[in-house]
Image (cartoon, rainbow, N blue to C red; front, side):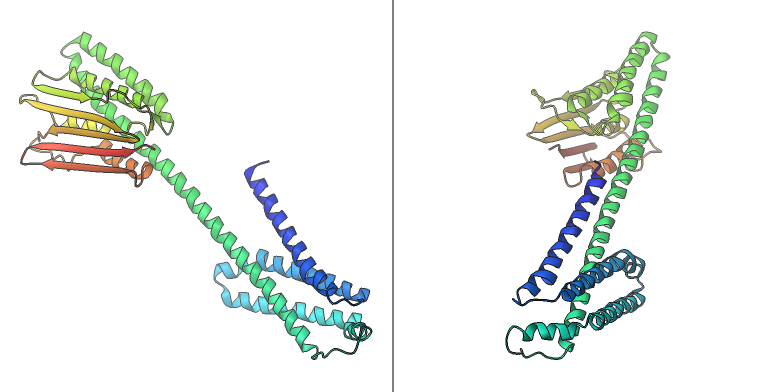
Length: 356
């Protein structure tokens, strides 16, 4: 049985039990507590009244509330509710006359002792109006609450679909962006050293295998992500000179945990994009640390600006979209500090990610 069918079955069962309890309590137990012999016409009347209340309940919940009240036609809704109460009241009065209920009930009471002080029939009529109004009020409340809960579930489903679509779109942007830069590097290597370029292509194919297959799931293992970063750094080192120093430090005992695929790469890629120079000494320091369920990424690099580019204006598609991915995947579970120190000419990234 599907979840929706199970939910519908539970709802039907609740409604049946509610009417059984109401019928037994209000229309059976209370009359029996009078300790008098009631005519069979009385039970016919009770069955008719209960049936009218059931019909009124579902006419209100299935027609009046969704078609009028929830569509902000409040005046029309209350007009129909008043008409519904009037119809039930008139049917109830007609049933009383048809079954001669007032005379039968007076006779039943008089047979079991002296006449009891009874106000006129208006007391019973007011009680009937109160019961009808109560049933309609409960019907309106339940229907409104169900609509509210349904809207919440719909909004949550739409939001989840939006997040999933947006994440797929963001990851699709990151991957081509990375490979575009990497292929440019390999192209440059083919002009210098064919053997080195072949090695670079082999590393790139291994990285592409990870991106095409392993990142299709919502999470990947941290060890896979780190292996991917190692391949990326190794690939980038093929084109760097001895003036560039790269330090990549990992925890001695890695606690392998699920992590969003390619969530670290853009920060590392950004360091290589803006933190190295072909002529001046430069360094990139990448530290990955773990504290229980927390993953800490620290990236530090120098700043080498071209005369027509700016690091803030040219963060790159990858870094910008990764920040958006963090907002979607780890809301309230990450801190990201990015500091561009123009005095020391350094660019520092500190990402703390709770993977629990």
